[in-house]
Amino acid sequence: MICSIFIYVLGGFIYNMLRMLYLYLLLLSVHHIVNIVAIKFEEKPQNATINAGNDKPFICTVSDMLNNEQRFAWYKGNIQLTDGENVIEYNSGNERLSVSQLETSSGNIMSILKVDDAVSSDNGAYTCAILESSRIVLRSEPAYLIVHSLPGSQYPLCSVSKTIAVAGSTIILTCKSENVLPPVNLSWTENNNFISGRLEMRKKENEVINELMLLLKKEHNGIKFICNQVSDLMPNDHSYCSVGPLNVRYKPNVKIQHTSPVLPAIETVIFCQTFANPRVDSYRWTFNPQIKRRDYMLDSTGQVLTLLRPTLQQSGTNVTCTATNGVGKSSSSMQLLVALSEVSDGEYVTGETILDTQSQKQGRIRLSLDVVIIVVAGVIIVIVLVVLVPVYHYCLCRNGNITTVDSSGIKVTQPEVYYEAREGVILRHTIQDRSLPRVPTTEVYGHWRHSTASQVPNDLESHSYTYIDTEND
Image (cartoon, rainbow, N blue to C red; front, side, top):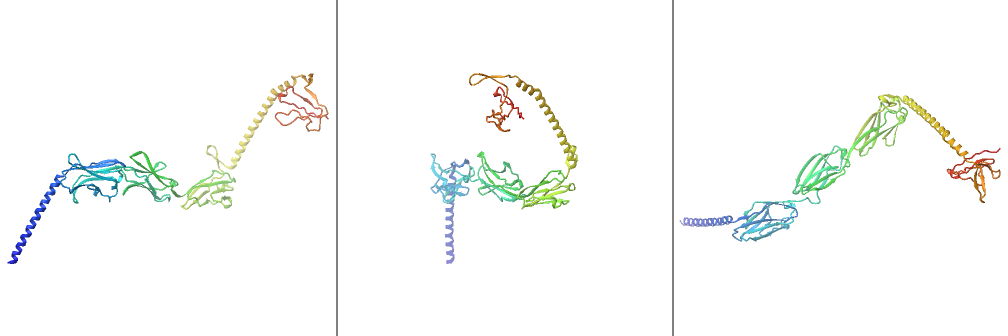
């Protein structure tokens, strides 16, 4: 009986307590609902696009804030930036953020979030929220901030998978830049020409990467590859980086340099021309059919072959040069033609015929020179007979005795021809004690001999002298 009464009383007490708790929670829920419904946004943050380095304020305005427990909070994505009028400093980049709160003339409450000196990392979605205790009771739609910027001065960055490779292998050229808006354009060029290859563009964290897979050719040896970076913010300007020059190794490219045909018994030089990286280590000459070792000679490198005495029997021999370097070896062949020389109409003649032909040509040349010499000699004889002889005769005969004045003023007749006395003549082929006037065009002085008749011109300025050398026996 007593137990039943106790259980009845305890049950009534528990029922009343639960009823009172329900009523309390109901009143509390109604209170929050009323507050949430009462608070609304009068102004929400708006999307914006700015250039790097500029400032951007976001504005959020609410009306009918009912109690002091409610406060503003700003978010970037899901990361809280502010709490009331305080910036949360543990977030990276928040040192450039500031927040302020004020009441408008209409009684509304305004919160202003300002982003100073914006950078590309400030890109994102910003929202304004109303907190009560630690709960979000109201949150705006996101406002997107887009910051246009150029990559940092350290970009672009170039690299290559390997700088020493063999022709025919593949290398990867990598060009990195900063992931900014608007995105930059990265392109690979070689000597101002775009490079063809398998291109891959990808993004990794805050970087954008351009990778080019290139199949190497021997022509790429010593080439620099350039990555150009272009941005829409500066369409007329660009920056670049480069890799190389590459060391592309390839086996020799062989070409035999020779003359064809060659004459028999005439020493002939054949040169093995090569292009290789690394340089050629060895050269080897082979002949089919075989040429005896005494009939040819090699230089110290083995690159130059000298056929000492080519014969008609060696015509048609296949001559092969094989060059070897650290990558591989290559060969080139030529066919030896002996004692054949091409003439008109595509015909070939033997060496003997060539010699006969050359002799005939030389005979024709000699005959032509003889004719020329005879003609020239005839012209000279005609000029002498027709021109010089009459002129000489005129100059010789036109003057009689010439009158002159001696030192005392007495007129003296000077003959054109006079004889020197025996005195004053010395040995044969020697010069007198007094010298004649020097011949203008030489250093020779005239030799006067005993019993020598001399013609002295009347005008010394004519610079002409005539010597008649007759020895008196």
